[in-house]
Image (tube, rainbow, N blue to C red):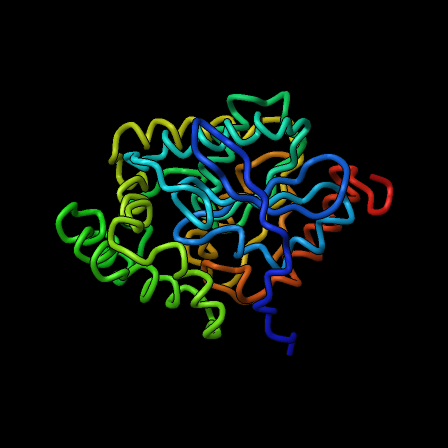
Length: 300
């Protein structure tokens, strides 16, 4: 069996001003940027065991979305469009050029929206368990339909995620095969000590484009996928079994419909694959960065 992932986060915190707020990020390595974008309810901490595999190939940067991790919590609606403005702002503030994107969960939607708008600034896209296309309620199992149905209700969802921290305490652990250590749980909970601080966590489930709703999110994510399927960029699809967003049948559809795609099965995992199989993710990512994207270790 592979050793358990390390709980350590041995990276120096860095901050950059974006739209009047400080955004947190960490970085390792030198050269062209490799930008890691997380989703709900995580932070740059999610990538702690994957970053070392990317750092030999370039400047590996893992951000904290606005309102999440150690980034500031300005008074926002925390809808997708708000997060996208801050991701675009961070890339500009750090003057990141020729970016390779590594995407998970809502990082997938944000990363593809950025890439679709700025295709000349993107060198390649790697993704896993990411929001890259609209879904239908029939794509979810009974437990997922029940949980996300309630979380999408403004009243019930706020009670669950603002008051009870349900996503953090219950949903996330359900979507990891192993048990997180006390140190890991504390790291994920630390950004959200109060109901007010958990607003981004509560809003994200309502943004998922399910059966056409919300309409604006369906349009955005559908446009992303239409563009993504055929754009001439190297793409790496990391999937696991049984998966959550990319169950086996959905993974097969992705492999069949997306051009310029390299697909790697990283083993057994649910949604937060970085907590179950970080070494498999890192090894596949390192190989792809070197052989396909052309970021060769030791030359940057």
